[in-house]
Amino acid sequence: MNRRWEYFSSQNVWKLYFDPYGYGESVIAELSKDECGDWILSSDLLGLYEEYFDDFNDHDCLEVVQCQVEDMIHEHYLGDAKYYQEIANRFMEEA
Image (cartoon, rainbow, N blue to C red; front, side, top):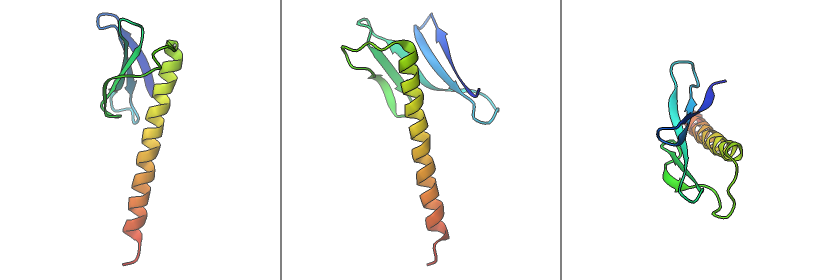
C-alpha cells in the first residue's frame, strides 16, 4: 500500500503518509481532535489548515473520518487529472 496513517501520541495527531512512486513518503494530511472531540483536518494538498471536519454533534469514529479524508484526497487528484487532460487536449487542438 502506498498510503498509511500513523499516530503520534506526543502531538495527539494522526498523519497520513503517501508515496505514489516509491521515492519517499510525505505527509499529505493530519487529523486531530479538539477538547470537545471534534475532528480537525490540516492538509497543504487540500489547502486546509486546522479546519473543523465533522458535524459538531456527530463525532464520527476515527476509521470513518480517515476514509472521508482519503476520499477527499482521491477526489482532489481526480480533479487534477481532469484539469491536466483538458490542458493536454487543448494543446493538441489545431490552431
